[in-house]
Amino acid sequence: MAGSDRRQALYLIADQMRGITTAGRQHAANVSEAERAERLMGLAADLAAMADDATPESVRPTSWPSRGTASPPRSGSTRPSSTPTIASSWFG
Image: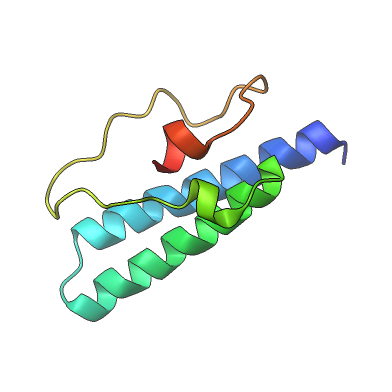
């Protein structure tokens, strides 16, 4: 797999994890489920950081939206190959 294909594949996996995590946290029935969702978001950030050769801290979310608040709409399910980093627009 070429470098850009691998990077795109990592983005897609991390994006799917991020979506599952967001829904899981918003619909968590208890604190344990919400904490599990936050751990999964951290793993998705680690994966995205690997795709960007960045530090995990640079792509981890700094805060979560309030429970029950919808996430900002996504423009699509794939990342453009010209996207240099996802830190500010994807997990921030």
